[in-house]
Image 1 (cartoon, rainbow, N blue to C red):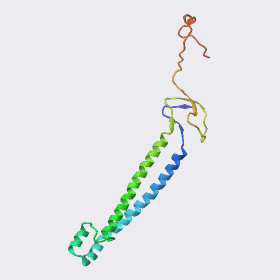
Image 2: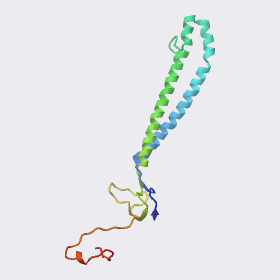
Image 3: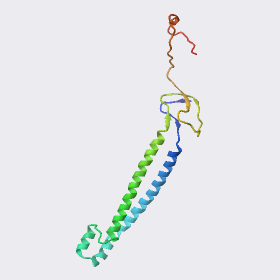
Image 4: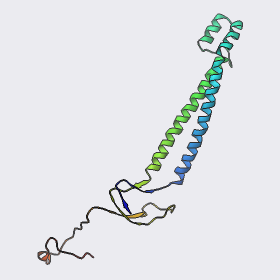
Length: 173
């Protein structure tokens, strides 16, 4: 089988990397859903600001309302306290998602690094491994020959060196 330089000859698989990729993808999916939900809840909460401000304006002093307008909580569990909690929760999900995406990128690079490519154009003379076969470090996967001319270097005994000339045929054993 003729192959060009850089052709992927084999993709090695590591079940641990494949399982980790599945786990990270599941985490990413869950975090995406949580972020979407968190954004919706925060948007809904922010949409109630004016209504809450109007109600609080009848109950609290101008100083308390200045705190409210500055985004400072007047009492635990109030509008600004809940807004802060929602924003922190959303930032936490986004941070976790960024970590998971980074981990996914690393695992994909790891999987890509387990590809064996042809160093030059050449010929795969024989495959010694079958698809899905378990291989150990150091096992030969294939016999590969480059398209470059074959050159053999040898040494001659001084007794016969005078009878050898360039271009003569030789038998190699």
